[in-house]
Image 1 (cartoon, helix red, strand yellow):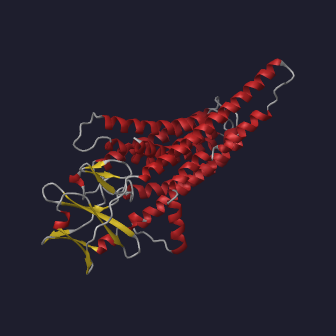
Image 2 (cartoon, one colour; image 1 turned 90 degrees about the horizontal axis):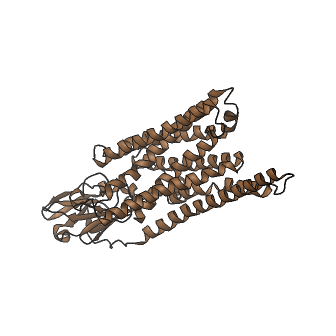
Image 3 (spheres, helix red, strand yellow; image 1 turned 45 degrees about the horizontal axis):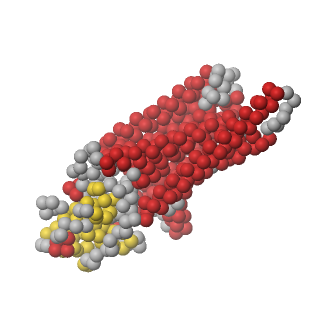
Amino acid sequence: MLAQYVHALQGLLGPCLLAVGLDVLLGSTNRPSCRALRIGDRWRLAGILFGVAGAIVFAALRATAVINRRSNVNLPTLICAVALDVAVLAAALCAQRAVKRADVRPAPAIAANIVAAAALAATVFYATPDVILQLTNFVEPGDSPFTSAMLVRLIGFLLGVGTAMAVAAIIRTLRQTAVRASFTVAVALLIVVQLVRHGLDLVALCTNMRLFALHGTAFRMFITMRNHALALVIAQAVIFVIPIAASLVTGLRRPVAPANAALARAAKATRRRAFVASISAALAIATAWLSLAWGDAKLSEVPELSPPEQYALADGLAKITFAQVADGHLHRFEYKAQDGTMMRFIIIKKNGGAYGVGLDACETCGDAGYYEKDGKIICKRCDVAINLATIGFKGGCNPIPVTYKAGNGVIEIETGELDSLSSHFR
């Protein structure tokens, strides 16, 4: 349950905050009578729906292994996302002027909303498939789809989605009391953080595909930022302390005793709204922050991976005897790649005598690794049991397959094959 909650919240918090932030800056709530802004609302909604629809299709194709290399889709998506992040940042910074003149000059407002719609579509399309694919992990292989374990995972998933949407909705209430400039700054910073996240993912993907390589200081900086990916997600929510502070200032500056009773009541109502909105938003941000930080720490605690076993390594071959893995249990091995990366691979004898050989890592959950419990192989990060028959094949949360040869009582893996996969452990 916790894994599903954290994964859903982490994946959807940024897109939800972006949608709300752009709605505050470019939406018709600024000027309900303006036709251009109402058209812009429809454009942004269409962008979100297009991104969700595309993500559902992409997730379905990945789940059924029709698409077994997501990099072929993610590479152009990330390139577009980075470009659109820059464009929507410019649109956000110019939003106030465009909205103010939308009645007499509707083109800039509509253009800004079209850019916002495209950015939302790209962001949602890239972020959502991994969240959707959790739906395929609720039922463990061989189990009935109607179990208490499935229900618990589903509740965790729905709570994660609901928390992301609730946090964004609560922050949106600040638009009534915070000055517009504070929202402009917050949304601009949100987009900058999103640009950094997309940029890091693009660099990681390009290095995995061997389109280029990083060395020295650039590589160390990249690894440091990748290791703080969760902090970037949390930062996207914490940024909204800026409009929270602005809302509090509005409440404190509002006179409590104007000249007449009607103005006095209005002033008190404004102060009350400002304080309620600020406190609610602060609690929402704190909830997201603590949930992600605590949840990630908890998921990283247990279980411990079994220590790596010994094996023969000579003449460019890693050799593991059949006898060493004949018991049908998970066996873990460690290898130091030519680039210095310490990586792990696993071997398990499957039903029928075949062998499942793969990295102790997957495309979805990274190098978290797998462990054996009650006869099942379970992903350490997402707590999903892996179908033994599919180990050695691409797709889902399966270990990334490693090519091998089996014969004469020995499993042989070329070290060059392992070297080519070392990026999965950086």
